[in-house]
Amino acid sequence: MTEIQSTTNSTPAMPTPASLKPPVRPAISQASQWGRVSEDGTVFLNAPEGEVEVGQYAAGTPHEGLTFYARKYDDLVVEIDVIQTRLTEGKTSADAAVQVVKKVRDTLAKRSFVGDIATLEARCTEVEALIEEKRANERARKAAQKENARAARLLLVEEAEKMSDSGSWKSTTERYTAIVEEWKTLPRVDRSAEQELWKRLSNARTSFDKRRRAHFHELDAVRKDAMSAKRDLITRAQAAAGTTDAKAGIKKFKDLMEDWKRAPRGSRADEDKLWKRFKAAQDEFYDKLKASEAAEEEKLVPNVPLKEELAVKIEALLPVDLKNLKNQKSQFRELQIAWEKIGEVPKKERAKLDSRVKRVEDAFRVVEETKWTKSNPEALARAEDTANAFSDGLIKYERQLEQAQAKGDTKTAAQLEESIRSLRALLGAVESTAADLNS
Image (tube, rainbow, N blue to C red):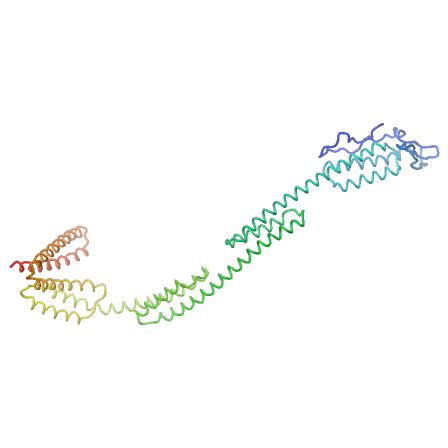
């Protein structure tokens, strides 16, 4: 039996069975192998079951009639060739190929052509095998796709469930959004399984959202409380800024500052704005206080030369003479009364002037103690120890004075010279006392 040759040339995308060979279409000269035309124009087909009448052809020669019905067979072969090529190249679906094979088989069953029935039926069977193979591959592909999609969705669900207890509100919210977008890109292959997994993902996200809303609702309540408390502190600070009582104002602002620290905190932006207002009230009070103190200090400046003059007179009482103690002490008291009458001096001068007077007070106290303890055997030892201490201190000051003079530090040198004068006076008093105790 002669094979029918397909007119379609293609490169298969998938292997075909070795037996699947396209039949050779009968040449016009070979059409008589598969049929004949009677003298009255009746065309017969040599079918497997015997000779079958397929139609009439009276418009031309018997050869032309036979060729006409042979071309119908060629058309069926072309359809099988085309669907085979499209199947192997993956350019058609199994269902579409089934329809083509069914059409060819139905036409074969009608016996309305001239050609090799057995070979074309074998071709149909082999194409059906390709269709089943394609369907099997498609089922495997869909099963793999389904499993991959399920696994990908499950990973997203498990991640979403782990994040439901997260406290990283911003980053977690962004990740949930990304998970939903990624979910949408996955293939939809199993509706029921997807719905179950989506329910788990949705529940996890809902749980997180409830916690996030509760958290920020609480923060909002705290922020409102903080705003209210600190606005009240600002009002109190603004009222305190106008006080003229320095001591009371300082205490008031100290207490307000402690209250501010204990108050709840709001948002960073709110805190900055409220603090600026509170600080402005505080600065207003302390600026006024500094200005007032500066004005008061200025009023005391004239007292400085008066006390400096008096300090010189007080220091002139040194050394204290034990024999003339009563008279010197009386003069010292009169000078102290005059000192008090002068009043205060600016703070920067106060300590220096007061220390000059105190040195004289110390000298009188030492002499009085000496007089009181003159009969005490231990008094002499104490006087000598005191004299030694003053002497050591004097040596120390003199060394520091030399260093200050070498550096050109006139201010420090002047202070040291004054300290040395005072210490020498004290040393002289103590040495005098020690001499009296030895006499």
